[in-house]
Image (tube, rainbow over all chains, first blue to last red; front, side):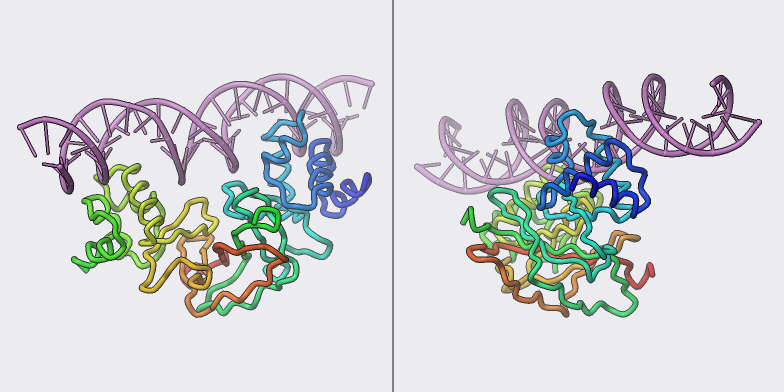
Length: 136
Length: 136
DNA sequence: TTAAACTTTGCAATTGAGTTGCAGTATATT
DNA sequence: AATATACTGCAACTCAATTGCAAAGTTTAA
């Protein structure tokens, strides 16, 4: 785990700077998707805008992908090996309206969606909202 | 169409005030989901917060439902007849990343999603992003 | 090895959607 | 009409996201 962040950055062709390593490690240590604020809280001495820019860079270089779970905050998760952030790599997310936790629903594949003529899918964002097991 | 807004408000037990009628008419006239800002632009002499509060009331009384299409703005659409805003009434949306238009994909039913034990679904928000026929 | 060029970072300030407090206006109730 | 209740418009605020800028760090080239 110690080295993993650096390795990933190298593979994805991102300069392994201090902030980037810290942010990526933080994401790797926390299995659930994390918001900018979550990361900011976790890395107490790192500037928000630096984290923000790291995340933007990560997204661009496909180190992480973002999830809009309707919490009002974008969440970020490390792309699993082989993930190209293609639609077929995506899965449903579950957002608990009580504890604000975002779960990945890995068991359900996203079905093929028939789009109208000439519509081109780039990505998808599928979120189920409700109460998780702890809150229901 | 002229009378329809008032009728809907009556049926859904919402006081048919001036702003509410204007907002609902605006939504009825525009088939695609509209954001607060869209409505504000459309109704040039109506205050934003009044529109906002109308929409909140509408949501509560199930006159409209909201869609988070990842554009950063919540969109609103009039509930079709029989819609209870239940998960099973929901459908996919398509958000064009170029022209920022949100389409309803009514042809695809949302599949039943297996949730982990004791997870309770309240609502769902399914958005496909990409390019629409005009932009691709 | 030093200077120039480029990248990254931290701070402060701005944006923009959403939301709220409050006082004035309109509408309904007695 | 007098009172209560609901609605509206304005201004101000919140809060996440984003940007401008200068300082610090790193790389490249002379």
